[in-house]
Length: 143
View 1: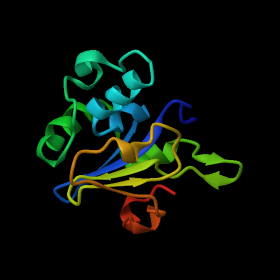
View 2: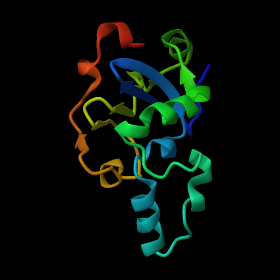
View 3: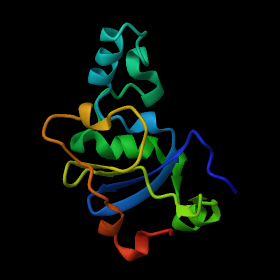
């Protein structure tokens, strides 16, 4: 089966546990308040007033990550499910777009179109643009 064009593969780590997700990328903008402010300042309508799309959670950080990931559970997928997708484009493997490491407060950013995830992170977080797939343990790899 094909990966829908509007979906991204994201890996999250919390308390040493890893979970794969296939979802829209916007869920993974960690600080919706700053993202929405940038939208409005650019003359656009607010992205999601009240943050209803994300269950009222404006900023996702280590402190509320468990609740956020629980709400994201409908988008969670197993390695077996990921392996069922055709994850190649032009002969290249489609790697994860993001690795959200709540344990280290690091957002590893792969090849993903806007938004600029690094501009919308909670205080104390760092963005890493270095290739991260080799950081992942072998047992987590679907490729």
